[in-house]
Amino acid sequence: MKILHTSDWHLGQNFMGKSRVDEHEAFLSWLLKIIEEKQIEILLVSGDIFDTGTPPNYALELYYNFLKELSSIKILIATIITAGNHDSVSTLKAPKQLLEVLNVHVITTGDEDENVIIPINKNDDLISIVCAIPFLRDSVIRESLSGITISEKEKLANSGIKAYYENCYKKALELKQDKNIPIIGMGHLTTVGSRSSQSERDIYIGGTIDIGGDYLASMFDYVALGHLHINQVVGNNEHVRYSGSPIPLSFSESKNSQKVNLVSFTQNEMSIEEIEVPLYRKLLVIKGNYETIKNELTKIEDKNSWIEVHISDDNAMYANNEIRQLASKLELTLLAVKIDKSEKQLKANELKVISLDELSVEQVFEKRLELENIEDKEFEKELLLNFKEVVSKVQSL
Image (spheres, rainbow, N blue to C red):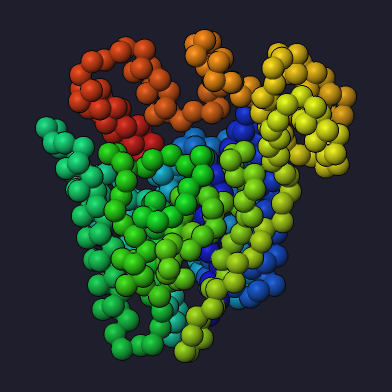
């Protein structure tokens, strides 16, 4: 049996005013070819299909066209898609029953109305069981109680998530009986010991969730995780993995290699192959003074690249203007120019202009709170906590 694990597509992302449609189109076209070439039987997509809860029409069109094309691949038994924290439950859920006719299973919340235990049958034989666990929202894992501390809310989230996974695994064991078949887990969360980039946002109110690879590895034969954009093994558990995003989603991910995970099961063993996704467009980060950046720009041959420049120069404004003019002359796309201030400049308390593209919704609220100079820090934390709860509820609509 062959399984392909991918996640974090973020279809419809608007990146500093630029559409990623060409990159996503190229990835999905490549993914279809890989599924056929590698004779994939199960496709797992572990959340964040879309970048926002209200994806643009072209992103929806990409998604549905891809699923339509999947239906013509005869060897593919099932496609299982779980919602991530970026996804709108209603958007993913709307065509759910129609997609099941195409052997596409969409799990949105994991609440009692959804069966997250998906048996995989081939020629009437049970060959695997998938615990298709999506991003577990507050309404599923815990009650939102007033008057409790952030630490207590963290504990509620931890215990709620663990209880959910344990319950799913118990049901999968009952279905498995004495058959020698793998049980696959899915998830969309941050695990202890994993590496993140700057483009992911905290998804559970109160901070870190204390769930690690060892815990998940003790139950499942393979765990297909989403949310973190770096392809990685969690701790020392080879079979607990993030696939990462198929395209770099921020300049902080410019040096990552985008991959999908191919998991093969035979009767006695499992093997995992990381398949590198062809890069349609490079994201380049160039740092240094004017002369360094100028030399690096002239070396760029791929005009399709998007570029971020960090200037550390005594005459930063002059360097900024010259670099922009040079980039235009070289027909390069310069998306951001950042001036790395010296210690002297920082002490001068100069006005810092930040683009909203660089901030999450929560960070914008935090910046607003800073202007209030609230002396009661516990009250400030409670305001931020309540705001995150509201955002979580809005994103689940």
